[in-house]
Amino acid sequence: MKIKENLSLIKSRIPESVVLVAVSKTKSNKLIMEAYNSGHRVFGENKVQEMVLKWETLPKDIEWHMIGHVQRNKVKYMAPFVSLIHGVDSLKLLIEINKQAKKNDRTINCLLQVHIAKEETKQGFNVIELDLVFKKLQSLENIQIKGLMGMATFTNDSSLIESEFKSLKSKFDVLKLNNKKFDVLSMGMSGDYKSAIIIGSTMIRVGSKIFGERN
Ligand SMILES: *Cc1c(COP(=O)(O)O)cnc(C)c1O
Image 1 (tube, rainbow, N blue to C red):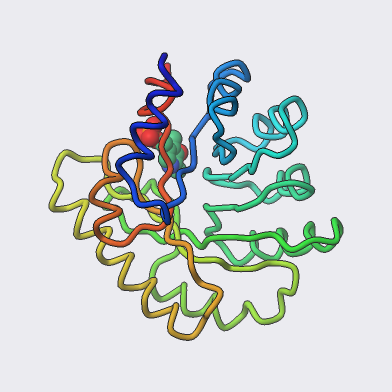
Image 2 (image 1 turned 90 degrees about the vertical axis):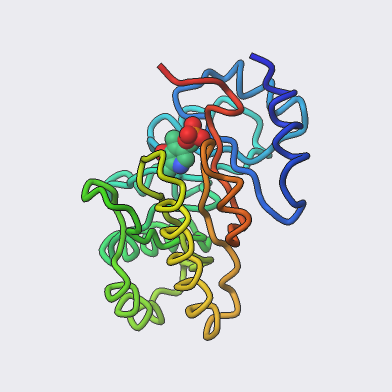
């Protein structure tokens, strides 16, 4: 796998202001170190235990992003080091993250996941819930909501994907009006990051286009 070449190709195609999260789930430390040695520092994982193991064994200047669905009883394991949790999809989870952040004497950055896809299985708040969550956030002092995350429907229909990205972007713009700390819109993966960026993504999560297909 030409990991270094894949990374520089993607970086040459995206604006410098867009953050590239290299999604390393299921991939070995050896492959991650190939990306690290080419200068990359931001990695995404979707399972807490796997991320903790990698954090323990890999260089400490790596920024670890949790991009998957998070169970509340696992938050404590990543609370000491996680740099951004993308998939926050319930108020109960936010309350637990706040509690564990406080125990570790830190603030944990979070994104609220919004349900934009057609598939019911995909996680996330709907737009009405999102407004309720915002009202309750004030009391949570050890979390910082940095923005929104969304996943489009798994489909070849690019117009459907684009309309889902556009609905997420417009929700992001509305919330940003009253929240100056809101500056991350995490949308776009290997297959759709180009259109996500055109629509306004500031952070893309790319796995297979860097590390190859997963088994
Ligand atoms: C696996 C995963 C990705 C990366 O997917 P690729 O298609 O391999 O780029 C992005 N986001 C989430 C939430 C994922 O679980």
